[in-house]
Length: 212
Image (tube, rainbow, N blue to C red; front, side, top):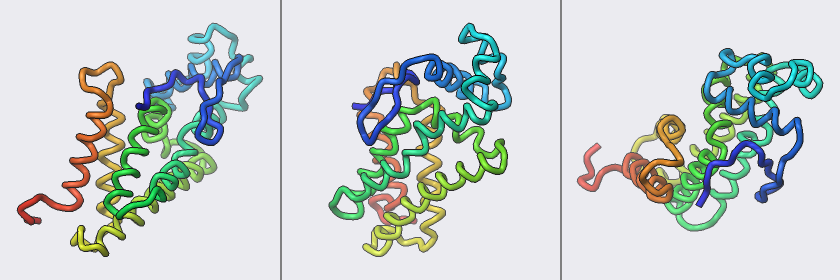
């Protein structure tokens, strides 16, 4: 079962690696503030104040606020497309692989909940370079979903030919989950995953009566 990390963990392959030291403390505090207040609502001075250091300490490690934001994305959201590709290549029918894809996406989003949330909220508010990186990540994720949904369409499970619209709708469900999910909520996380996956599957394939 995946749990939300505390911002002090990096990833090497699929294995966590402990992140320690002043730079990692800055990343952790910045992720907290970015996810809570957004990119424009968070200042370098505010990050320094919460961490109890001078502004110059932050500029020693990062050129500017966007550089700090980008490094957080690098260790978290940027690895998501690769994780989804691995899940999709896990074998089985298109529906089985779609389930595996959804599960992997939900687990990764829960583990990097704060980072995923700040990515979704602020991706269109960055410089051209920052925006380009974000759009590439979004495009790769969308392509992965379109691929498996198209396979399901060819198997006769989906009747619409607008598979990209279906993919956008599915991603909307997963991204909204980042807004309401709370690790300390009353429902076990595995049950939440199954509820979301069942909702998406029936929404994609259609209800048992066969009505559109």
